[in-house]
Length: 248
Ligand SMILES: O=C(O)CCC(=O)C(=O)O
Image (cartoon, helix red, strand yellow):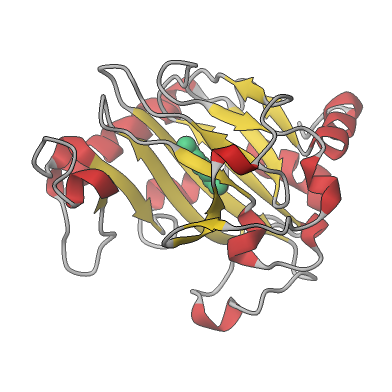
């Protein structure tokens, strides 16, 4: 299916584009069930390790770390068939290929799970502050809503056009070298992107973005896949698992 001409133009102009209904409901239901299992199982040898909400882990959130306070998984695609299936979903790969060309490879993936009530904000940042991929136009992040993402539970927010200015000079938050203080970023033009389960936000590695805390009683879980074209590279490549090609 790919993207329409209008969606492609919107992406290059704004640095992101929402794509509703890209992942079928039945597939999202299976993913939600697998997240429930992974979260309940906790750490296991040879498998992905969940990490806790930072304030909960530090004992500063008034609740003990548990399955209901898991914040993040790194790298499910190399280990979990359902997540490889998700990253390889034809409609998603076609949409990515419309932005970065073929073949499409998975470079990295993560799952940002904002637990009910204690799910914290993700401060403003640019993914390429972490990734340092060049050329930056040959990588794109796909943010996939597993649960509904709303204004109340911390949907994604983008600063439109910020990808055109390159990596921003910044004073990072103390102890978080890639995250900016919201006070240092002009958020006045930001666009919030609420998503239904299965909706995807595709965004440029240089666009400034952030998300607010989860103030609700429900999870706000997202799967995030960083795709790359073979002509792009990062100085961190040698520390990473091999890329996984998901298109011809
Ligand atoms: O899911 C979120 O709330 C934040 C995700 C994010 O900032 C990212 O993928 O870079």
